[in-house]
Length: 254
Image 1 (tube, one colour):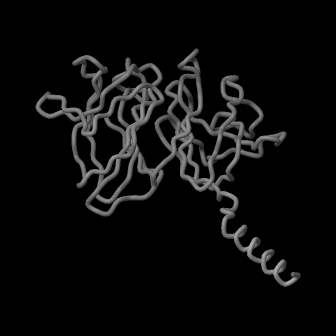
Image 2 (tube, helix red, strand yellow):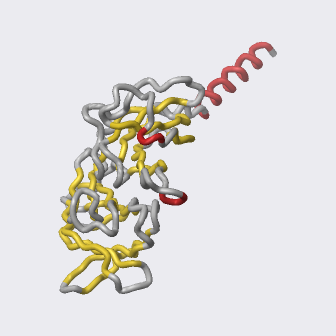
Image 3 (cartoon, one colour):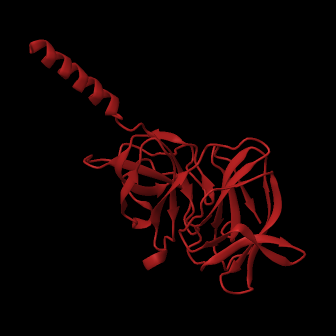
């Protein structure tokens, strides 16, 4: 009986180990600065249960508007986030008195863009917020490409994304219609793309934006709609921001 009990115990332990998936690994996190009326910024993060922020995330001058940071490893968990100016010596004072954003949920074993959206001067739906965008960093085999589209322009209404040829708008296939802070799924295309991207205000023929667009073979990218719709020039202009999901490289158009 003792021998049978011992065998049963070993079997139970073996099955328990086999079923244990273990603790999730860290996330690979980058920060996206999509707040058009903010100066260059950095962020500070602290896990729940921690009394103080430990330091700035990006460093090295922080992030200018319409850019993303390199990825850093971050343990899975729930965090508070504080936006500070890029030149701040520490994490003590939030940018423009914005205060802290929480909870920021970071899932393990993922690639995430922590998008900072809204307006420093915004209220309601346009106030500064954080949006978690889970990224796909598995690039397709060349010559294929993989793309998704994200709407992070706080003053822009719902839009349809398409291409423009001879002044004729053609919706993407599958169709992409986005509201603020929304994102499409990733879609695979058979070949590298070079097109003129365009936006229509949803339900109208009003051409809101057009810009040159190029994505190389064997890459995966996110196309962010950034800026202010009443601006056609300068840093805060409405534009497409095409960012690689495997590097911090972004190209903006127009």
